[in-house]
Length: 181
Image 1 (cartoon, one colour):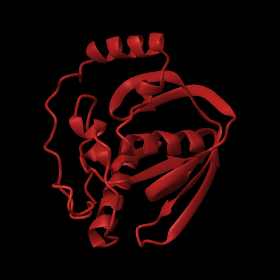
Image 2 (tube, rainbow, N blue to C red):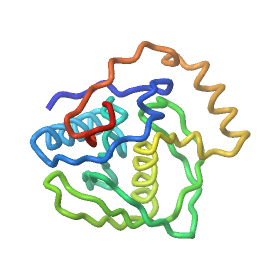
Image 3 (cartoon, rainbow, N blue to C red):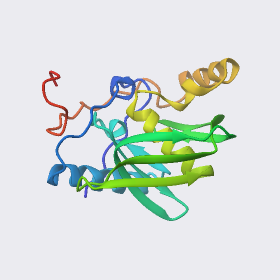
């Protein structure tokens, strides 16, 4: 499967909520393969479909040797929090401490439309929350306190990649029908 270009901060697709997947078909399986190959090549702990320009609720993860994917996820978060370093493939070389739930129960589907439940804590919980945020148009820097966010924005503006031309957004047949996409 081909490795896809990863969209960078500033690309509008990263701020747009992704659409639910309605077709669990060959195209969806190809998307998950592309996400997985791109994530492993980057390398990253996760990658959401909007990060490769596809506005669908799909992501992959690679944590502690476990590689997986989730389609149309919903999360139940613990009240206990963790605070630790977080980065993002769409924000290269940027790492800041970010508060997240310590554990999570993620529900969704696999590429065949079969229900899936993933329970995770620590890094897996962080990855599941981070990737689900991408599907909602939220970046981890949005979750930083005011001072850290200002520092992150300064670092982004001074980066070599900021403002580089972005590739064209892909249109997918999996999007919810009737939404004008």
